[in-house]
Image (cartoon, rainbow, N blue to C red; front, side, top):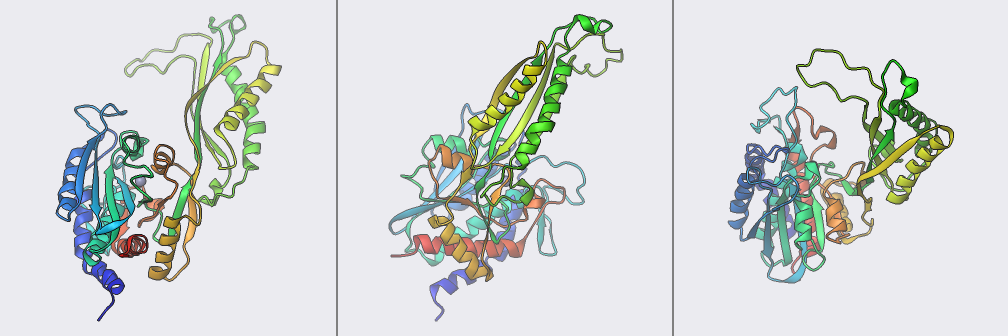
Length: 428
Ligand SMILES: [Zn+2]
């Protein structure tokens, strides 16, 4: 007689068609964000599926969250399944939204076409494939180990692609992610089936404005050009800040490796007159720019703080001020997210690592994401440190045309998730 562990893995193999059909069904509900299409439809679909497996379902609208409106309500779904005895809760959190389609597709982005073992469509990789994988893993586990301890939760949440405020952040504020309720979290983002993602770098966005004085463009000496002041700021950033950022390295195993240092993107630059409205065919008028604005997107390391990041920019601006006449500026912080790094020996990391070894026969790679994802809210608002991203799909395919996920990778990941469930919630 085969033991139950073997039975569990066989059970997942047997559900291959179910996994394919579930992924296709999710892809065929276009949940583009922005604006946030069909959130209720996909939540209802997930609710029906999970309710049939004995999950208690809660549908939660993030009323009043950014983006929420009666036309585009921010719906979320949370399913909760109790085991036969007391124990811990493992929560699988997936975002239900997908990014815009873009150009260059050779297949229907919402068709879910299956070809050569791959399912194609917007969101297959990021991350409806991961969502379907976690559902198959949880259902197989519950069926084979009906006597499991603790609880399994599966959520589908809104707006990850636009910051997660109408999704995980809202749920965390309402107590859905809290140490009393949830002990382990897996976010099945597409990090590749043999990698465990421990967290992400921090984010600091700010806007720098330089001030000038308007005058006639034929007599610029009577005014003061905010654009020339901004030019001096850019020169100082090139001369001192970028070289300093390149020297800041981290213990975080960020992928790709070029992101294993501090980085800063100049997101936008505006100076002087606004762009003319569409349809205006005349010339601009002759004025000296009295304002220039630059938005910077700074990604920082666990070794740094948001306050230090801000101070570095203040130092740049003060150095410019010391040598330029009439230099005036404002620095406005737009938003900030602290870096997150789950302990390498946290229980969820150990459980998934052991399962990767068992299913794939290799040691997992530990990685950190260059950008943030919903783990930021689970960590800061939910106070849950025992959280990772782990799921099928090749990260580089996310947001690309002809995005796909391989069925075999989903099956392997489902086995890893099921064995992690067994290790953490197995019958006592
Ligand atoms: Zn994603």
